Length: 246
Image 1 (cartoon, rainbow, N blue to C red):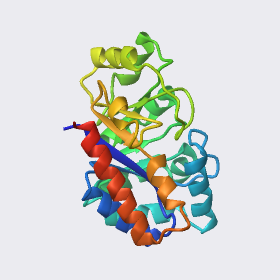
Image 2 (image 1 turned 180 degrees about the vertical axis):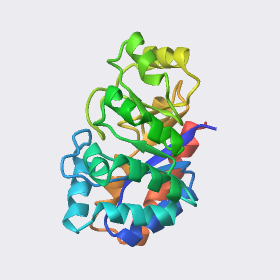
Image 3 (image 1 turned 90 degrees about the vertical axis):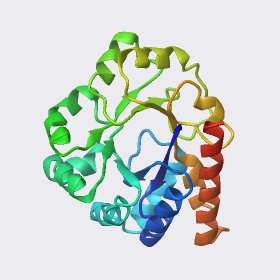
Image 4 (image 1 turned 120 degrees about the vertical axis):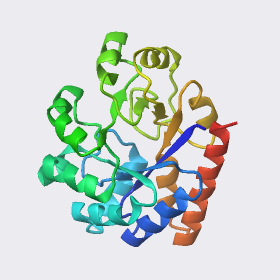
């Protein structure tokens, strides 16, 4: 069974909504949930997620809120934190990883923490049984891929193209998938540009997909109430889960 990972922006449009949506997605085919940590300069994110980041921060969301909401979610849905390194560093990585372990958060996805610098924290990640998700891009050569995936845990985040989330760009990923699988047995999930229309194509040769903008775009719709947004997101999740396993 191929996996579906869903990204949602924590605290948007409201904190209580995040919990309701997360639990509903967990009942609608989502295997793992990325709780996005709002940040003022989300360099890897496209305009949809960037706007949600901005609006969540404008409403006053703070990092401590992410921790509190995670406590309500992680025991029921496999949960990872997806965010930029600054908020994590400011909290203190040692304390944060201990907190993640206590809450039950299983992994962290930090797109602006280079592989070489992440190695400094390997012991803390391992000690607290929290996975630091490895990224691989289509531009990485075989030698680089071997290094990137050597200590990979949980899954590998395969970036579908060199760009930002939410774009409709496409790359031939089969050569990089072959390279990854020659060096590790860690599952490979593809992200960036995955939605109901592209999921079946994107999942070819990999073990799962990561979907973000398709969900966050629903959260931005001003003509839908909270229940309608949850129902729409769950419908998207069910459709994608079905398509990637056809």
